[in-house]
Image (cartoon, rainbow, N blue to C red; front, side, top):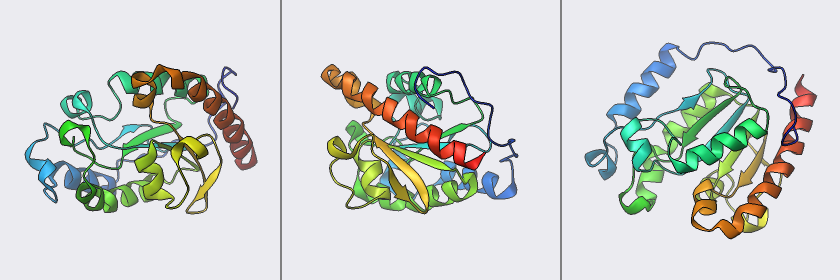
Length: 205
């Protein structure tokens, strides 16, 4: 859907995520001690969104606000992301948000060991959520799902493929906050994303 268009009717009815598998996975993540980040977190950050999302956004790691709340993208970057989601016409049940790493890293620097430790959690989340469309935020999420895709500044807004599904990488919202000169690029990429999303979801109606 193009940015600014009216919201779509949801493509499919929501089916509960509150299965034994999802509850078990959430408990595993909340109790995880696979890497040193477990010793410094306030909360493990698992998921925010609908119970059967059409679109899943994948960020990099929680920040301070997320660590305190136990939910992804609830700080300044989250507000920018929420505006983008609303502009794309995605309703509350149509999207979900996860991170590569489930605990806040020190100085917001992403340890490779933590990415490796959390990767099985991400894979199980995506398997259970079963989205039709994936959007990565930032270079780390892109390189983890599509190794060799190229620099995020070159491929942001382009349609790629992950596990047989369309995937569109975007700049991380935090990058726009730290460098406002990137705001026009962010807006252009969202428009491109909207066109791809609209085409893909029309094909599945």
